[in-house]
Image 1 (spheres, rainbow, N blue to C red):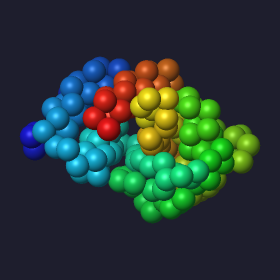
Image 2 (spheres, rainbow, N blue to C red; image 1 turned 90 degrees about the horizontal axis):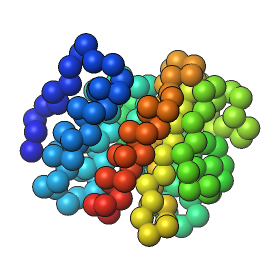
Image 3 (cartoon, rainbow, N blue to C red; image 1 turned 30 degrees about the horizontal axis):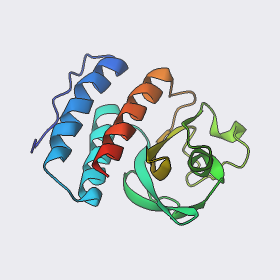
Image 4 (spheres, one colour; image 1 turned 90 degrees about the vertical axis):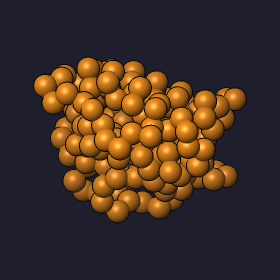
Length: 160
């Protein structure tokens, strides 16, 4: 198991994801405990990109329940179809929000969050959890984040 990440500070966002994902794979491949792996994945994303909040909401029946995360305290439960996370859960697809104040029904767990991306982790056509990443900056997420966070979601689904 790696004890530290090796990500070049001079790299652009895509290059950082390209370096990070294999390190996450290596970090989690020998560990079977999902909570431990999700905690380390949250930490790795936070350490690499400095997002406002990074974490997981796990499916429990018809709602999402807070899982491992990095950042300030968060909403504990989110209903199916509600807010950005619940919408990604219901639609089974990534939801990228450049300005959370413009998203109908946005759940403001923190007023400091300005933009958000939520990626569902799907196995056998069932959403198991969502990856939720928030930024304190408007329009902080793009197609690069979506591409690599979806790759990360696939990696997590394979271990689930």
